[in-house]
Image 1 (cartoon, helix red, strand yellow):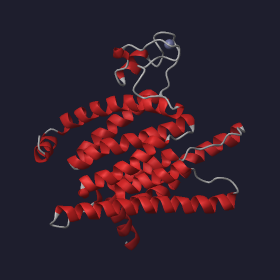
Image 2: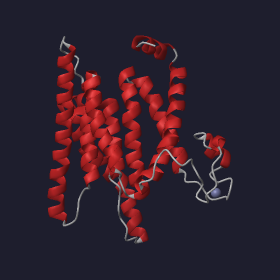
Image 3: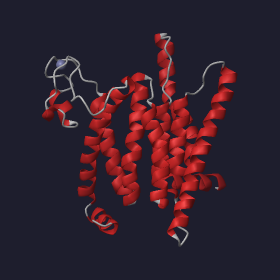
Length: 284
Ligand SMILES: [Zn+2]
């Protein structure tokens, strides 16, 4: 199916396209759960097959995304241990994001979203679950962002030149600048923050993630990832800070990667429109 044919099909049958994309997303979400569970432990994400915590193999029909968890009502069939609600949430989130991507983005960008968004979900999930962000998906984000920019220059909005190679070179430049800005920005904030607060303000994972968003979205994306992520982080952190104070818990680690990932995803979907809206709002 050519690109134009795909575009026509999506326009004619949006519900079918959304359901198909959602089903693919749910299956990928199921694999992302495996990654979130195993990557921080440095285990293979391919073998062995999924097992319950008690050691029993999980039959294939209970591994069906969303339905498996719903059929079991969150309790393992073998031993009755409760299965984290994270599993259906990740599957549902991936499914919804894939459906939204195919309905709102041009086909090529939607295809790239199918790589970009799962990587963000894995990174956010690992940080939430284990407070440990694996390097492999994070570095993959940087490398793939550059690769996709060269393959699909329109990802960086580079469609102006009549000669295709020029567009590709420009897009590669945009991506590299995005990586550089993301890296430098977070590095400086981390350095200054560490001096002011006397403790590590941000981790290396935050640097690589902002660089990765810059690789996919250009330097504006990297800037939005950091500052938008900080705003989202404060909004998410507020109830947690209250909870920490009221419960007097000593552990107040608030994962920052999920906030950065949310900001990166927002920019990927609606970055240029956000800038436009901001300009309109500022200029009245
Ligand atoms: Zn079990």
